[in-house]
Image (cartoon, rainbow, N blue to C red):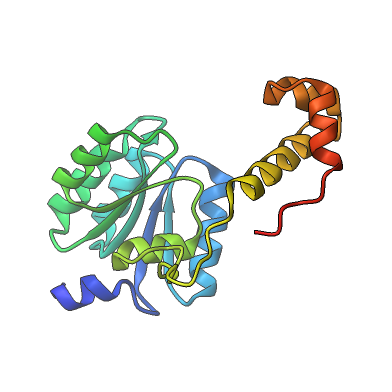
Length: 189
């Protein structure tokens, strides 16, 4: 696989192997990839993944870290051993620096935490930010401390279901102090 292709990510018609034991998640991800024009194969264990690896050369793989019969790190090692040009993305709900480093050493292109969707996985293959470009903040007016305090108080009040006493306890304020702050108009800046 050329370096240019690795940077652009999978193209329509490419095959993607999904290795994840969460049936609902893997089927949803497979359907999303199919809707985008990719060929999809799904394995739900290390053993099933090894079977898929033996059947066909792997170009693109999405592998969960924790599988019922072993680690996704083993699967990535097997994929890269069998298909040296394979591009793998490691998924995990249990992220740690050490497993991210191990995944990279074994050949994973990227390491992302669940929950994810197909667009996030494709962005990981392309080494792009799944949330899009960073917005230009040069024209952003920083809110005043009074405005920030007012917004925080209202957010806590909402989280407490509108219960002023509970919100006051959460904020470490006397109930009357909180009521007085809530009666005031919100700061303009």
